[in-house]
Image (tube, rainbow, N blue to C red):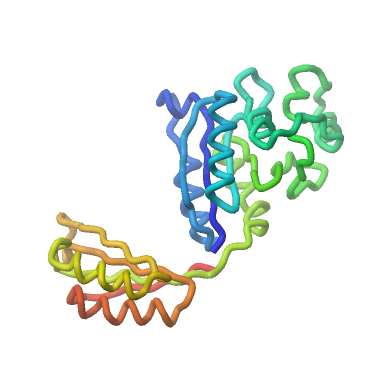
Length: 242
């Protein structure tokens, strides 16, 4: 399966001035695309921090997705941070410069901040009218405004190459410690299926949810059958993400 690191960039999130909406959205969106989320970070508008986090993400995951810090103000330093991580200069992209002019912007030291991107960047979903998603190497750079992130996702998603996966949720009255060893043994026999255990002591009708997730529906079904016995299932639910 393809994997991704998500980096939410913005002092305003860390300070509590604004609530992060992009992280929860991207968690769900990546799951729907069949892309594993390896890591989710919220970091400051700091060049060194951005560069370091992007480097780590590229070592960890197939893709890195950033949100925030792509505007014209002094604290919009994402492009520069990614360029530093990739070891390339910032260059004025002619298509972005032309796009800004269609918005009625005169290119100057301020507006050029939105048109200078890491050298070699590709514009994803550029139709000449809307600001595109910037892809540098394996790093997608999205704006920080939640409405724009949602709008741009349909452009970005086809680039990710996700794989369909299957998930089952088994509900039980068992307590987690009562089935922990059995779940560990089952996980050892099915290493290609991720098994998770989630206690719900205050839920009505059950006290435990156990999940199994994998790309092979037959293997997931085999784990489900054993889980139903191991945890004495009340019922189970199944879904597929493609």
